Length: 407
Ligand code: AMP
Ligand code: MG
Image (cartoon, rainbow, N blue to C red; front, side, top):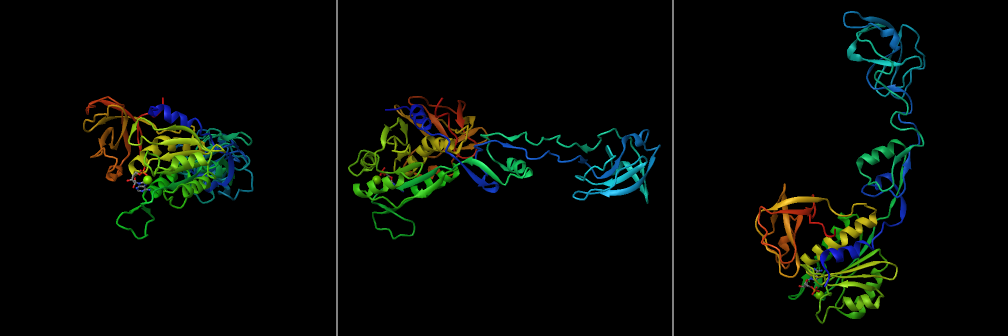
């Protein structure tokens, strides 16, 4: 049976950034640039004022100070969007505001606080050197120069930069489409009547949410009954996505029919069963068009854990994320935990600063252990008991934190 890190590597190494598509700028949030973008214009596009104040010829202000004001004559105004339209001559000044074009003849700005207005004249109370409070044309970036590189994640700041250069459309990697197929005769859709032996399907909803969180687009298939023809048809349908996720039916029971459905659909097996707790029966294969097909265990806790360790990094890579794993954190345990003898345990925990609070129960049958989770403590087989003082590496931040799956 495979170790966790080897199984993870087998999945992630088959996931590559998806082809590019062009999307409106506002829809590019959270996506990764598939092609670099260049500056279309000098930024600033023209010399302009960094302050509200007075545009001057620096040489005219020589010697100016609070006790030795220099008086200049007001000949116009330049405001953002409306230039002065006149040039500055010796002994003159033009009222100017932040972002307004510097008038011809001016080479500096004296800020308002260092001046005294006197009807048609202004007293300058501080000497300016050429360039003072002036934002020079192209000092940020020159037309044609690189603006944002390929591979960069588009967040609010990147949207500001792209918009400032008129990029209304960006070329980004496509989001992975993820087909979700929950299997089990006992499952009912929310709102449907329940018989004594039926239960609500929670996996579809939880996995769809996790897919969205990872940047993917869930495509929910109808519930799969535990009959081979029905499952075969649904699995074949799911292969039109980039990733097919099934839940349930991957163990060794008589009604665990996902194995047969994967085989019938031509999905080549890469592995079945990994030495982890929970999630041991997880199955991974590759479909005819390179579709990644993961048979996650039906138990809702196992489904979520196996999604986190096997599916999420693959989806992040498909989205173009160069760092598909969560960042590493170092934590201490709030209470001791002991690993099972033969499997690596992924123990749900809540993080408080650098302290991990393990869930009350490690039982995978108890869904309450999924509430408030932002970390999985990794307990390698046979280790422990791990005490509170023992430092553990975990991957995290908000969401689920874990120790490095691979590496
Ligand atoms: P299985 O892997 O099909 O043997 O299912 C293991 C356990 O998980 C059983 O108790 C199932 O009833 C339960 N289960 C399977 N699929 C779901 C689901 N979609 N929602 C909630 N529970 C499920
Ligand atoms: Mg089942």
